[in-house]
Length: 165
Image 1: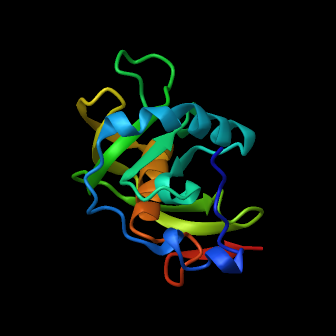
Image 2: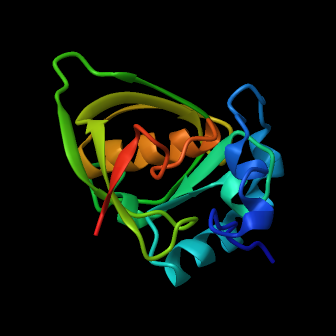
């Protein structure tokens, strides 16, 4: 059973939460076994997503729940996504917005974080197909937040976000 690694747990303070995992090319087939547990963790913790290193896995992927508001291919209700080997770039004419964010690894705290409003995201999905999407608003924010985890960056880092009291 997977568990969320907490930044305020001194034993885990550095460790895997601070590792840059983006250079690891991960095979999507190895990750499908973790999907039910990642779904459970997001639901139980009311999270929009969870990155591999947040659950102690040294791989380049994250999971985004329906709460992440990723658009469905057919324009229907938002769906969950396993994002393997994800990358993103700023979309042309994208502005930036500062909003409050929480993090499963920093429970009970919120930080104001500046993020791009629109991004061009790319990842391999759970069945091995490469997907490209223009993500806006909350979906773009969640993708950037989870990708930061894969870089070893947390919203509590100096210069990243200001804590909301």
